[in-house]
Image 1 (cartoon, rainbow, N blue to C red):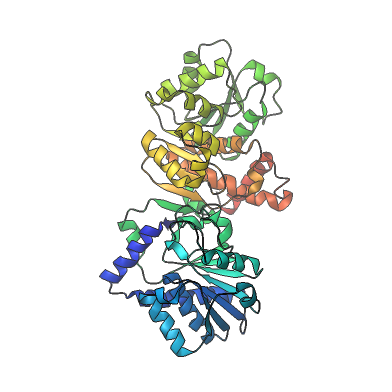
Image 2 (image 1 turned 60 degrees about the vertical axis):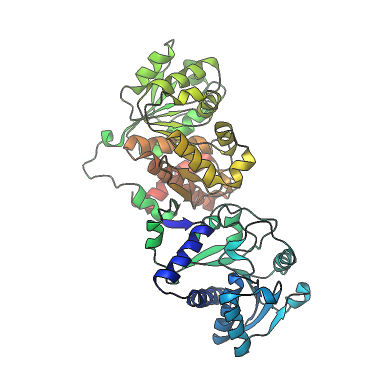
Length: 503
């Protein structure tokens, strides 16, 4: 898993390297500029014309170094400075002075960008980087818009200008890059939307800052990529039996939404649960679509809510509650009894989350680990924040709630975020817009339940489930496209992902 840092954390690592290792800031800048030239070389060959649009801070300094490195490789760089030249200080000024004396690239202010960027094959964005705090202001707004309007490949230095390094939010306007060269550690904003879509391919380069700095600082945020799948999901022993992989009980489906029960339990089945039982009313069962033969039934009957929960909990190793359950009186009573009485690990989704959001007292008698799988609107109801606030800082929203409530949160959406009760956070770097359809969350809840039943710790169960779900969706669109993707297609593709992971 790749460590993700904030702009403040990265600045602290820079200072520590300079103070402890006697690694001059100018040396770090020289290395970063050369790495930027490496990324340019991956996208275009010399003697291409390269426009390097530089700001007046250290991001611009990286750009000045990149100009010299590109010249040495046979490119034709030209540097455009945005902002008052007299405000360039320190290492950036030293890099500019060296470039001026070398005469290896023309240098001029960016005054008429539409005209100045015309005779160019590729643009390097070295305007603002990770230090941006508020909205982009002039003259940088004009420069950002000109870069985007040029309709040319763009390589961003550290971060596309205008993005928040910590949240991936657009601060007024932002550059859209084909690739981004960042240094030492990736930033959170590289992998949180909309920033993820504007960074293109993010390349992380070692510039001499030790990786142990992140461990020393107790960095809590990590990126989970498809390559991490095998390390998250243990291999099955050769002498395994079904009892080794747990018993999932799904309290799901209703007369109005019977399909949710099928998607949830089939998701758990394909994710490798040892046994799966569907806990459902006779009324809901009547209109249910075909379900796999492997799914066992537990019919509710006329039991009290407490008796029903006691029956479900007897040999379950994980219980899923909420998908398609409805918000009727019986469903509310059953969910409340479950939350108050069972000590079995729970995955709470959909209607169970709505019931929990309406009664904060249900947290008081929590006896087991809970994994909550809200979408942003559900997260807003649970937390009291607005949906806009949730989306503005998805890491903070999930992390604060998980630590305050002592649960695991899987905040769904583009770049799903998993937060554990100890404050650890994981961003899932997989998935596509085809998942934005009814039933996708039901499948995900089933997968979470399967991994909980198998005994994975809740944060890892949620990470493994979110990654498998997203990667299977990426696999499935090869045959169905994004618009044609169905949740059942994702279930079918899970087997291909397991096979690739040798699981």
